[in-house]
Amino acid sequence: MVKGQLHQVVRQSYLKAVGSEPPKFVIEPAKHRMFGDFSTNIAMVSCQESGENAVIFAQKIVQQLEETKVFRSVSVTTPGFINFTVTDEYIIEFVRNVIGSPEAFGRSDLGKEIRVLIEYVSANPTGPLTLANGRGAFVGESIAKVLELYGCTVMREFYVNDQGSQVRQLGHTLLHPEDPEKQYAGKYIDDLRKRIKEKDEQEAGEKAVVIIMEEMIKPTLKSIGIEFHQYFSEKSLHQTGVYKKAMDLLKLGGYTYEADGATWVSTTRFGDSEDRVILRSDGTPSYFANDIAYHSYKLQRGYHRLINVLGADHFQYTRQMNMIVEGILRDKFMWGGKLDWVVTQIVRLFANGEEIKMSKRAGTYIPLDEVLEEVGPDVTRFLFLSKSVDTHLDFNFDIAKSNSSQNPVFYIQYAYARISSIFRQFSKEDDFVIPEKIMITSPIERQLLLRIMQFPDLVEEIAGDLQVHKLTHYATGLATCLHSFYENLRVQGEAPEIAQSRLAILKATSITIKKTLDLIGITAPSRMVKNDEKAPTTNS
RNA sequence: GCCCCUAUAGCUUAACGGAUAAAGUACCAGUCUUCGGAACUGGUGAUGUAGGUUCGAUUCCUACUGGGGGCACCA
Image (cartoon, rainbow, N blue to C red; front, side):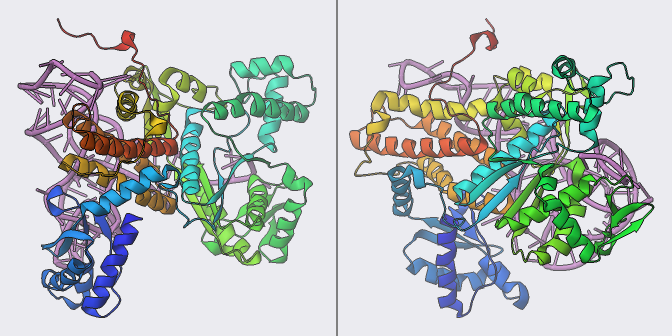
């Protein structure tokens, strides 16, 4: 938003100064205070081809920029950056809008026409959600929220693998506790065993899947504030004919062939290392076949953007699926949308000093529930979201627990609580009126406000690249600005005009922190309740 | 063997190809008669190795080394 506005201003000035459309350039918050508020590389990218001196080139644009009156000052530094400082009026106008309509702040209409389908978690319904499932859950949910703020209509979907051999294996495990080859273990298996009356493995498995979904998976998701619009049943693909249509389409298109008693789809033509089975020699469809059907259906449902959030253990698989969609389905369904794969790297868990290998089948895993209870949902969520999905996440249970009173979550929440505390004393939150005059009396206020101004840009950026970890870093930075404000500037004891102005700034800050925390999915408490037991003992 | 992710401060992590590589934590030194010290201010400290492309590389390319994941008629 701010960047977009400034981008336009710079572009216009460039047009006037140079007489042609500028090359692709960026506006970014200045790296250092001394460079001003924002900077652009427009001169450097323009001189890339010609080899002209970027500093001299920049001077031409600066003259035009100065005439726009948007900036208090514009300067050029080597090797050709143009730095500008916006006027206080520009910032104050922005703050007024934030406080004036908090609901609209950060909200964009850029995504208004975009319908998004995001699939995440999609955990096998053969056991409780694990810590690894948690990563996808937190990331997916956060992406969904950002896109909603961006203006998109977002459908959240969980693909339920309620069919296939694992369901039967689950049934087998339940009916044959004595089988040493049994595939699943854990207390929940013992509990299920008492409740399942079915004698057929398939039926027992299906019954168990329903119970696991309803009594374990959904409640856990709900406890962290995640509710899917739809739980899409794998089995239903066959009942509705979607599966058959998709397979016919592959066959008629000449993409399949039979060999070794099975039916294969030729993915090698799209660069795969080998072809894949879609119909096994026993006549049952492979998981891949069902998922092709599922994706063919996704493409037909009128979405502009499909997002799949999956774990790294499915990476190879995402590539195959992508080949099918891009190579076959897109054309067949004349789909002009965008398909995004968000692949989250593995979560490894350490407790009592050693790694715990997670496997539902072996029964060695830590349920998400347990972590949420021990570490707390806010902290767990923040820890998971503060890392890029591309990096492995080593979750140290012991450290997460022991550090529970000293981490960035409290730091940010405390910033929010401090503002709330001030408002409790100086104004009722709900009858706060925007003062006539808002003043910037200190560089600290300026820095805080500039940080707030970045929020809408951040939302836009994440709506594009889906890098939700940026939210946690932004939130920490915002909290730092606030704490600095709190320590150095006061409301109490100041002249009424200044006090009111500062309340306005605090109001805007509070709104921004709250919005950011909402996107991350953690609470913004107006009071922090300190747990005295856990407080570190002071030296005498 | 092939494919993918990854290597940044003691530790956990940031950084559209840009300027003096940024935070938290740990450590050192400071800051409270006033809005909540779970705070603030200052300091120590880092791009795995070797090349290449570029005005400019943590970022792109190649090789090497270390860590992780995937290579089923499982899902």
